[in-house]
Length: 273
Image (tube, rainbow, N blue to C red; front, side, top):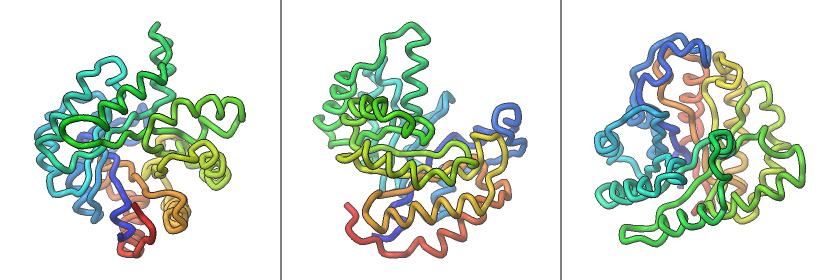
């Protein structure tokens, strides 16, 4: 397996962050679709996350047909089990749809409580996993999103959170603020303790959303180099690049990532699943 086969896109509807200066500091415009990003960067896997936009799933799924693997965000399945039926229905027609992902797991869990809903019961997660694994289409993987600032602060909290990790096939860990990037190696050691039986991937922001400004090329490449080392060592299986919505805006971090892909993308990765 080549390294590029271990890399995913975190896909959003094209233009989703256009002129979004008030929230995340990006005042430019982009038209690049998720499928175009995959073509440009030479990768074949995408998690599609609509971000609250109403999207035509079939149109996106058709554009993703040449890709090797596809996943859709499905946190809403906690309140609406039919969302799993939608994913399974799509998977029946599109054979590369093989995964789901629960974005911003802790933030969305906290938001549920603020809205007066019951806290998430791990049994509900196990029930969703059963539906994803045991169906008349094929088993689908179930991923969680976790951030470095959400763990490694209190061992008891980390230990108690494991019951939420266990139903998932894997966890994608993200570093929200670029200024915290130097903590990633230390955080990864905590992450391994929390995920002894889980598959692991790293998320990599190509825009510094946590501090509402452009990401620096040096910080992004430093992260990618660390993540590559962990893939080569077998401690993780992939990287998820965020995102297509600024990829054609002539940003240094995107250009540097593209060059990094040209340099490392065809490296052979041993012992991958």
